[in-house]
Length: 115
Image (tube, rainbow, N blue to C red):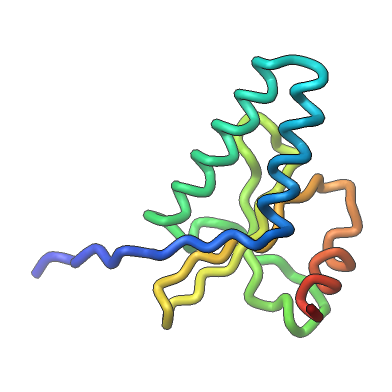
């Protein structure tokens, strides 16, 4: 018996898309090549979640609405983390946000969840 690949749907929140673009703009002000590397790394990491959506580490937040959140680092930018949910029932990978690890992540994500 062979396992059948189930096609995942990808959804990116406005907050995540804005964070990706803002970070690219920040890097673009320093170097075109770093900005390009950032964009490629983020897109590759996100695409990888379509084939291995459970590979990210579970987040251990206290906020009840954040319990199913996972995270992966952006390759080459290890301080930047992609926060997402794998919603099996809908075959959906939802990219919630992309944040630098030094930020108050639970507070930022908790505020998004309340919207």
